[in-house]
Length: 445
Image (spheres, rainbow, N blue to C red):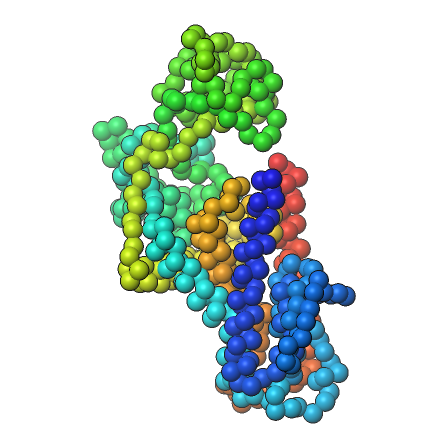
């Protein structure tokens, strides 16, 4: 059921984004009296799920959910309709329009995706406001792993700033380090204030999920739930809702201490001290810690159980500038993330993912606030990716149109045809690479 909910959210989100993107092209084409032959959600090789014709345009839905398209008369696109291009240009065709008009038609989809993202952010802020964990509220400090330890961080450190600049939102710390090339972290450890340099190799580690910084939480109350995977604790007799009081002869102050003890005793049997509802005394249950130091229990807890969250509410007129600002911030942040992909130092291309990665970011339970937040972000991604100067993308067409505007010379139809084919090959290669990364990651789990 969890996977189905994620898939449904992904399909709905992509459907909204594709329709809005293609409507941007459609509207601009109609504005300049250019004929649109087809308007399709998803691709329709060989057959369509349904279609109908209204006026001069055929509308429909394909079966291949990799995007969508509008087919504009007199334009060399992914359909590679060579026969139509052999005929004399008609006044209603794309190729007959002025270069600036063709430029606006080609950028219409990208512009509409940016506008959609901003409108969603405005609506989200007006409806739900903004809730976040202030860095100052993380009273128990942080937890990190061996990579974090190697640069000098310790569990319990309280992050004060990055490059001596305060970070208001705790969960913005990792993003700030990744995107803004931070050189140092200032932390409070006991009564000391320490400056910890960030080495060059830390960003590649972060991209691979190592050296992450998270909030440290108390051990108690440790109410048990189970992950979807196999659980040794469940097999041994632990039931959902049990409270773990301690292990062996130990009690813990923090949850990370419990995790560390279980890891240190991998391939050993440890004794869980359990309090069960309806029972007046503690029960001892022996459980095997597997070869990875895992017993198969998760705590039932949320961040706001231990920390004071901050919520900012927006009125209608306040939400408009706030949503616009958030939209431009997200665009800026994504462009910074995009730069990482081309860095040999970060090797961010190894973290590229396809549809499995995109689908995994949606929550396992339907949450409209999260859904619209993610849809807005995906709209920004779609806009940025489409404006790249790769033939077969909007940005490829824009590149050739700008060449025409600057030089006064239009590339030949044969050149545009070959460029379209080249671009499609590049896109399919990227698609295979990204989804191949997903498959490799699944195999390695």
